[in-house]
Length: 355
Image (tube, rainbow, N blue to C red; front, side, top):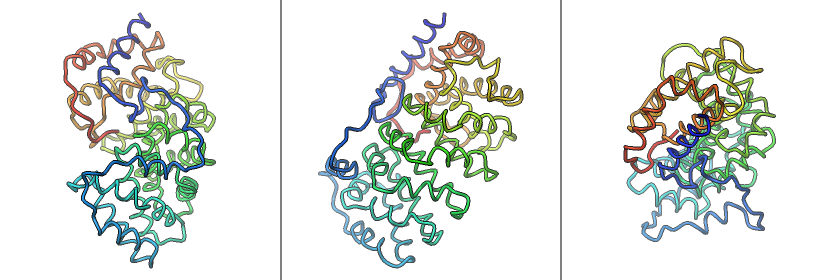
């Protein structure tokens, strides 16, 4: 039964038509070839913005990033607005920013000594640049020193921009599998995200758990995540979950999916694991039931807890779970097969806001 059931989940994943721009079970996880040129340079070279009209304001704002702190803060905020999806020219604007060196200029401002408001706008600009842009995610992760600066900003003593720094990691991991490999190889990154995922700040915890969930979908990243003690942290998040507000509910769902990504094929949900307490195990079971419901909402492009999940991001943990005989039976009991039938009979629209 397990082999057959796993086949249907894999087939469902392929039915989505996902490309290697997104992390899924169908995509190979390969290292970026070494080169004398940086990923930042290579990504800028590959940009095709022939249909985009050059925006002189972008060039002006990029030059202002090296000016006074107040000037740099305003410039970063304006770049964020030009890159935001609400801007009709956001795709062309993003590519112009990449070509003209915005990432390197923004990276230079990722320091604790930079005023907090400036760091906030810089992080916002970088996370928006990374959103749904594989080439830019690769450029950000390959920008010299940028990831190390984010590790510093994720520390408790770096001010109140941990959430904003974690969002950059989350977006890069969600939209570029090659970027994941750079992220997990950055010294201290997994440890910093793991620590942030268990802090009292719910907003920061929410983004950190989401980032760990995105990273956990890459098979090549799993050993580093397990070695970085991510599993105990996820168990703690599951155990401490309470309330039905958007943030707690979404954080709980992300933690359950990350746990399934890392252990679903090896451990039975009902029997718990070496890193989960009885309370965490019960919450994990609840999370698995929620995943099944969430798949149907994802197929229908309906938001849940304020987030629009893409089907592949839910199918991946379900695929992992389906490989264990005990979990396959649990998924059937919780109604996964009718949801898969909906998936096979529903035309999936082009990718939009994802999780």
